[in-house]
Length: 103
Image (cartoon, rainbow, N blue to C red):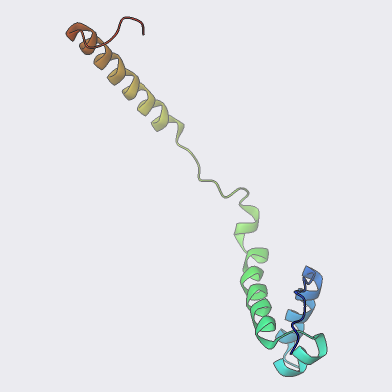
């Protein structure tokens, strides 16, 4: 038995096959023979189509980027805390003679 080279199908082809599977007019075996792909592949494409359909009609499509909103106020407060802490430790270490004067 010879191995067939790996094929890359276009998104349009995948959508066509998945929609045909969703229609239910033919069995998976018939669709697999018609489009010359494995039945498991058709099932995967059908699941991807169903999973992606919710994004098309849902509010997620209008949401924009998926990055969470950053609270600048809390970040500035944290920067202030760390600066104060660094200044305090720098003073304490320099008094103790453990901090070099080259800094």
